[in-house]
Image (cartoon, rainbow, N blue to C red):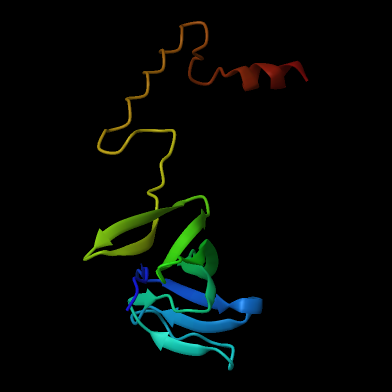
Length: 157
């Protein structure tokens, strides 16, 4: 048997496998995900944590649930080598996600993971800088009880 790359699904992910001509061949969905609704009846459906590419497969498209809806997060081409190996190559990964490849027992295992969000405020693990104290109002800006600027303006009317 020749070497075949594996794609490992994380929770809230599914992968669609397309063969020649763009035909959807397989939908692999993580077993802990909610049931899929409105699936294509012509494609095979499996609940699995790993997907092995097969001969004739051309593309894998990965989707992830985010903010209550599904979004395409990555895709890869499947390339057949002269020695018969089936490899996941040419990864196109959307912003906010990262492709990871790990060799395990002579096979490449691929994963798509969400990149932690960073903000321009404080870095992780540090408290935000204390806001500078506001200067106390000067005596001229203070008004005496019963003698506000508003009262003075109303007297002019």
